[in-house]
Length: 227
Image 1 (cartoon, rainbow, N blue to C red):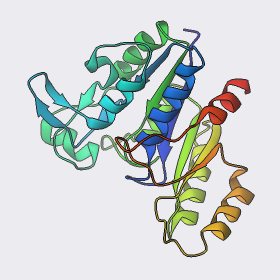
Image 2: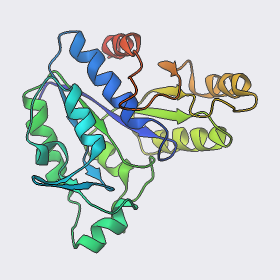
Image 3: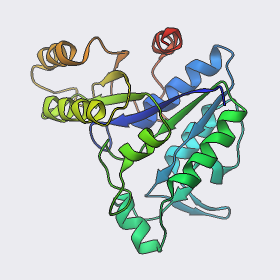
Image 4: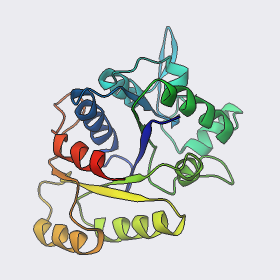
């Protein structure tokens, strides 16, 4: 399994993880790489004739250059838009890291790189004992943190960064997403984050899937050059 992989997490829900994951997938694919995607756990899914489907997972699949069965891309999919650990409990499901590892291995075997998007934030629980962080650590994936630039982002970003490092995961960088165009002192907050986290892989505006993806070509190039 020689494929490289990255785990996309965020400072919170609705901060642009899917936008960034899809944009990175597109950027790597345009470089001629075979890119697979994975959304290990999703809640807030829609019922379709094919079964439950996550809009986030479908958005990632639309940019991938490696086709894969939906259940491999999104092994655990729940209907209610609630925390995954509650949704799993209500569905009588147990999220199994070994199953996620097997799905990831299947994707990686056909790809040059795999983009994996978490749900919620870095410490979002997926069971009474496990959280999103455990998925990234179990798969030994470098972590990219999407920071939603809004009031409170400094605390959320610094705590997330601290926890990523404390769990022994490799911090691959961060993306600054200007989700609040009216944020007061946005440039000062951005500078503070740079002082603590380093220069971001990219700084983007509040774009959403379906409204255009940011160009993360430069970010993909930087990630490709890193060991």
